[in-house]
Amino acid sequence: MNHLNVESDLRLTSIEKGRTVKISHLQGGENFKEKLLSMGIIPGQTVLVMNSGKRGPVIIKVNDTRVVLGHNMAERITVRQ
Image 1 (cartoon, rainbow, N blue to C red):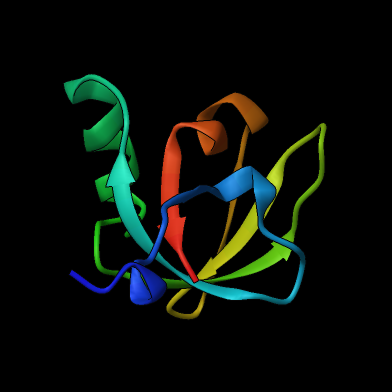
Image 2 (image 1 turned 180 degrees about the vertical axis):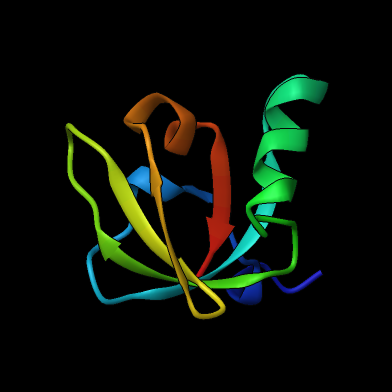
């Protein structure tokens, strides 16, 4: 295994504004996952981070739709750059 090419998962809340990332995992129960899936936030989906910070909501663009996520919800979404 080549450790130099290993991608690591990051929390959505740690991604800077303007970056495009791929959803890798949704960390939560069935209701949480169903809610995100209904908004188009599914593993493998590429999203654009429009607003993020250490506090407050995270805004992402999924396809042509802006989605506002509470900070705690966004903390449970992992992504890859």
